Length: 152
Image (cartoon, rainbow, N blue to C red; front, side):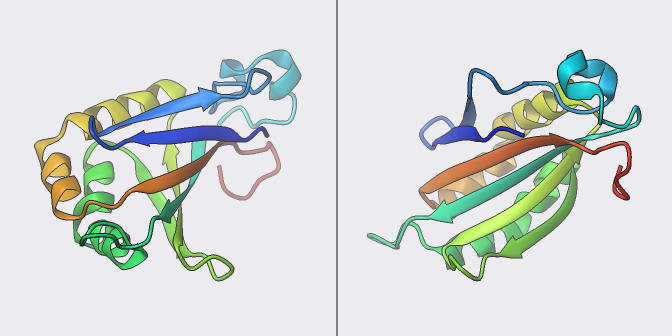
């Protein structure tokens, strides 16, 4: 599993992913991956995404982990679910209290891309993002469950 570097385009409300050159982009069922990466992936695997959002400190009323948590609490999770993602869970990092960690699941990579596209265009997201303006740094990891995983 390779690290995916992300940047959050706050002005556009879009998420841009910059993949490490040797990282596989697909995730989900083994058939979506190259032979090299699919040998240990379950044939019924979904696409999982682990995301870590580190909130910048509050400056001029913008930012802060509390505002980020409130944004998630108020509507962000519901919006992702509205657009077809399954939110597996959300966590508060204990070693870095300015970081929220969450995991989503999708049918496959194409479904993931569609969810994010629809989410970015949603007027409710635009309003929520304006209400809770939290500059972030993002780390994201794309994963497929192994053929022996309890979570498929």
